[in-house]
Every structure is written in structure tokens, then in C-alpha cells.
Length: 402
Image 1: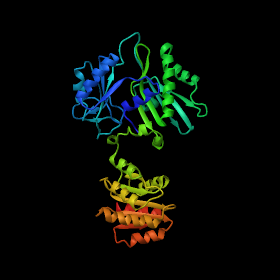
Image 2: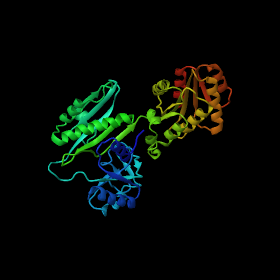
Image 3: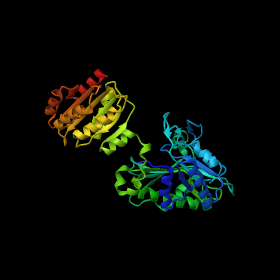
């Protein structure tokens, strides 16, 4: 589950991570009030207005309606509402949103932390994620803060520092110091970075996150270390342990079809293809997508109805797939292990009738428990549904029909 920057910063702050302070706003008037409050609390006289969407590259992105960038600087209280108005309710397009962009419903009014002082501010990258190959968490750091880490990895991989954490002992003091040394820090900034890394790692583990990305981590002109941005991904499978974090979910930032699928207990991911897939089991779903590509089609989605598929889940899956205008055919591929094929077949027929006229071909491939009975139900339904037993035959039918 993704959350907004302002939400991520509040979580990090709760674990002792020093952050760039800010207040969220939904209107230009709220933005000005937030700036006044921020001025009273921090003394800042310049304000950073930051679009809150689930995508990176906001500073370089452009709001279609106004031409404003997604992150702008207001040099006075009077400028704040004008800058906020240039972002709010506009469609922000970044390299991560694609050309369709995302509507901005909230902005974060943040304090200016790039103030002059005894030294120049410096930006760093710091991330924590699970290294699945090694089976442990890894801290990634770089002196190239503010840049896309993918670009750094491709063009200057030697500038990425990695420190793997043994899960049996956790993060050790020497490892945090090693990262801080590698970033070239010394004195108070070095001590601040060591503390920052420990607090960040504590937050990462305590929240069951799958990724933390702080880009940039800033060393201020007076050698303080703080998070200027924060991207936090929470492991969906652990949300039952974090009811407070689950409540932070912003459904307006997610694909409506994926939200609907989750409510129906379905695992759904939209893709850019022309053949809808409805399968039970993640492995079989991936194999089905492969066979669709081999047949000359492109999968329009990943949809796993699970091991207990019934008429209700099948109907819900149908309705979700049918909302995609790119779908030219639907391939239903069910292996009857726990679920009985005849029940799935009955569900397909019932869903077909409930939805009404369906103008695209549906290919149903059933194997396993009561597969023959299921095929018979399909064939005798009188509906425009094609039955297949062998996966190769189902793929051939898809190719023929599209």
C-alpha cells in the first residue's frame, strides 16, 4: 500500500526520524493558514508547496491546466495561496504517472530547509528494502541525492552504497557508521546521519514496510540531517497488524477496478492488452498470460479469483474485466483442485445472464475436479461461450477469435 509524503513523514517522525516540517492543505485558503502556522512554529519565511500524489518526479512534472510544476517555492505568505491554486485540482503529469497524469487533491506546505549558514546544504539518497535474492533487508545510500536512483544505478553504479542487514541480529552500530562514512560525513553531520539511519530502520521494521525511500536526505547548512521527501510502501499482507496505517489508504490514487476487485476478494492488476484473463491461482494466471502472448494476443489484466471461486466471485471478475474497453476476448482458465469445475461453469453461466448482453467472445478452459461436468454445462447453456480442455486449444481459440 502506498501512502502520501505527508503521511509517510508523520509515521517517520513518530519513530524519531527528523523531517522537514509541513502541514497538508486542500484549498488555497487552507494553504495560507498552514503557512502562517508553520511560520509561528518553525520561523520559516519561505514555503515549499508540494503536490501530494502517489508518483515521483513531482518537481519536474507539470500541471496541465496551469503549467506549474508539482513542487514550487513561495517566498512570502502572500505567494502561498497563489502557488497552491496553480497545483490544486490540476492534472500533474510526471515520468511516473504517464501522459494521463494524476489529479492533485492535496498539497503539503513545508518549511524552507535550504537556508544559508556555515556550510552548503548537501543532498543524499537513503533507501531500505528487502533483497529477495539474499533473503535480508538492505540499506542503499548514495551521495547523488535528488536524482532518480535508477539513473544513478545505470550511469554511475559505483556511487550506490549497499549494506545488508543480518535478520538474526538486526542493524548494527558499525553498519550505520559505515554508511555515514561512505557518504563522506563528519562531525555533527556524521552523528546525525548515524542516528537518522537507526531511527529509519526502526520505523521500517515496526511498520512492516516493503520499501522506504528518502530522496533527498538533507544535510542542512548547520549540519542537521533530515528527510525532505519520503516514499513509504507498506506490505499489504501486514495491514491487519496496523489498523491505523490501513486507514491512511487514499483510494482516489488507485485504479478504481483494482479497488473494486480488492473489495470482492480478487487479486487484480490492469495491463495494457486486449485479452481479459480470469484464473484461479497466481502461477496459473502467469502461465495463462504467457500462452496468450504466444497466441498473438496481449493480456489485459492479471486476475486471480483464488481457490474458492464461486458464482459471486466469477460475476465480480466479469464486471471488472468488462470495464476495460480494450478487452476483445476473455479467457477463463480454471484448475479444479479445491474448487469444482462444475461450480465455476455454473457461475460463468449465471454471471453471463446477470450481466446481460456480452459482445465479446469468452473461452472457458476447465481442468481437474468435475471438468467434464463443467464443460457440459458450458456447452448446453446456449450462450456464446467456447469450451476448451487443453490449454493449447484455449490459446488457439483466442488467436482465432481476436
